[in-house]
Length: 94
Image 1 (tube, rainbow, N blue to C red):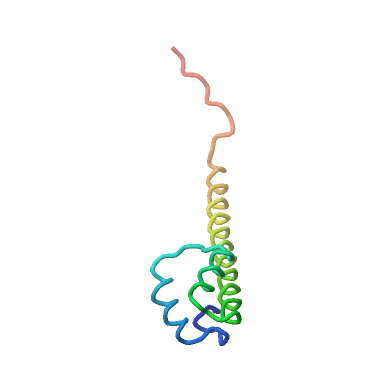
Image 2: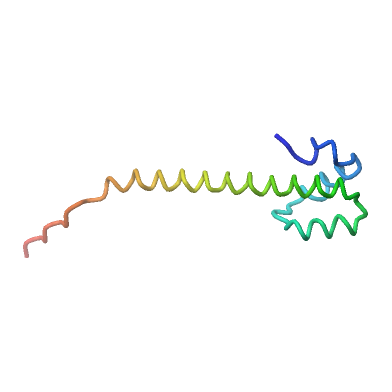
């Protein structure tokens, strides 16, 4: 499993701040917004590029996981459709 914590291009000080600040619930951040925020925070260009790459990888991993769950739900739904009646029930005599 990769991530900011395991990337040697990201300084230790930034790793600890990312753990505290980012793990509090930031779902997705665009690459441009992340670059801007890291630039304003004074992070080196090499570390910025490494962090942006990790962010992009995490977004793709999250998307793949979400699509896998949706595919599983769709497969389960298809299985349950086999129990649906194929003929209209006859009307009851009145």
